[in-house]
Amino acid sequence: MASREGSLDAPIRHPLDWQSEEFLDQAALDAELERVFDICHGCRRCFSLCHAFPTLFDLVDESASGELDTVPKTAYGDVVEHCYLCDLCYMTKCPYVPPHEWNVDFPHLMLRAKAKRFRDGGVKIRDRILSATDTVGKIAGIPVIAQVVNAVSATRAGRSLLRSTLGVARDAPLPKYHSATARKRHKASLASPEAIQPDPKQPKLAVFTTCYGNHNQPEIVDDLIAVLRHNHIEVCLPASEHCCGMPRLETGDLESVAALKDQNIPVLQALVDQGWAITACIPSCVLMFKQELPLLFPDDAAVRAVAEAFCDPFDYLMQRHKAGELRTDFSEPLGQVAYQVPCHLRVQNIGLKTRDVLALVPDTRVQAIERCSGHDGTYAVKQEYREISKKIARPVARQVDSADANHFTSDCPMAAEQIASIAESAQPVHPIQLLRRAYGI
Image 1 (cartoon, one colour):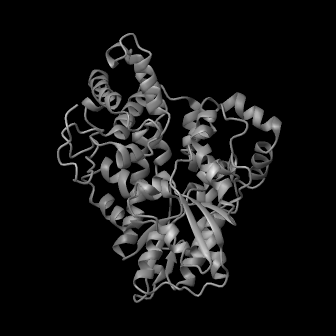
Image 2 (cartoon, rainbow, N blue to C red):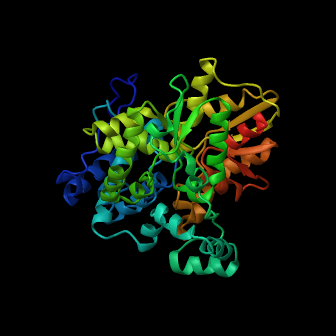
Image 3 (cartoon, helix red, strand yellow):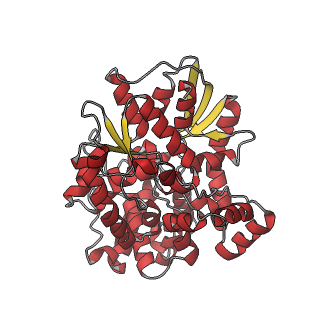
């Protein structure tokens, strides 16, 4: 295999030409899958990241020739199915990413194959429903219906029904739904920046609540807003909000991603034009606006402007600390904290800012665990992948159990619930909730 040239160069990401005719051409797609799979087979550095690579390597090893040439192209889809676009192979393992001449972008190739499958009608109704997070949240969050949904999903009979109708694993952790959503709780902040009229001397941060933060755990948004205001940061919520598009991206439904972009970006750009930075409490949503949308729509100036204004909440707080403007008058120590770093936070390349902020609290020790939870929003709840997802998560669960920590936390509440469902004794709490507790507010 050729040696890599320019190995000291940082990885770069090329825009995804998803609207070209070649993008969904079967012959062109198969040729690129064969090219990249052959490179991966010869390298095998990513064997331990997820189940996509073991699936590929098993297909090759069990083929007639022991090489890719005797693997039927119809089996390529098995590899695609196990990729949940965490991007870790691209960002941490692969030596052949651009600017290397071999130009390997495994996640975006998997996305291309998912888009082809979606266009050809190969996506199950179950997956379409699970990826419609905002719609499901609005329906399930209707008063009375929310109580029924939560009650049914907590019973053996209800879980059996979900398994038989939607293929949802019985033991997979499922989120609860709230009729008192985050946006309803903070309705007073749902105003245009002109109406808010913030003090120009104060920092301004708009909170994109996300589907999960709005419908499933609105208390996370409550705590984020409380921490920001405690630090004299002006807060508002966008006048309107729709799903960021990450769940649709993971199914290959790029047209829906485009439609959601057209709904969200004008509202967020209006905030940016008024000087607001933007944040969200779910790493996947931050990544969607910071990375994925700019790569899908590289010529959209509004998308770029929003991407530049979007930030992780703890990255924002650490920047305030470095400027000497973050309050450190903590009243409660946190002790030992076991902290799982989500994949979609790691690939943002901002460092471990959540760990660093929590470590500012006196008598607090944070153990960072940089391994995947195997959740991926929907992968871990599907019956056919539940055991695989648990296998991926077990090393994290073992570290959490051995940490003997006072708290277990992750920026991704879905990853935290997945790990807690496997660990012997772990009650997850979001890091922003820990920070609020440390402030005593």
